[in-house]
Length: 167
Image (cartoon, rainbow, N blue to C red; front, side):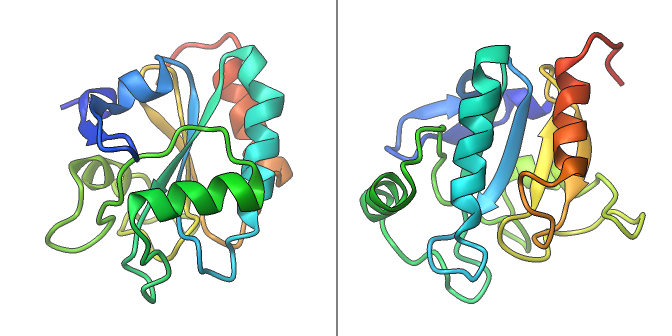
């Protein structure tokens, strides 16, 4: 199944697909958590969304509670936290598993993309980032330590927004 066709609910529980969430636009998909040392990355993610959305790009947050129990809240609590603390306007999905036996199929596909070390594998921590083409093809993967506004992330975003053939 293509990445964009993967069923996933919005944070409010509405059934949809990743393609409907992104609107067929290139995207930065990030597994997020509200109580993580990297949670301040929400601010940079929102800035990227505001900067690039006029050019047909979106950020998508995917909450996950698998790393240190750092996303324990309900959907309502997550939405409230993101909105009031960081002014998040980008779309968010339901809370999912990104690794292990209950891994969401979307992350089955994304974990095939090589990490910085050059090998594919499970998500290692909160705020791992994936840049996706408009057709859902993942083109870049960045670990937690790489900030959303890092030049390498921006370069990958510019790439998917540019005029080039899809992989």
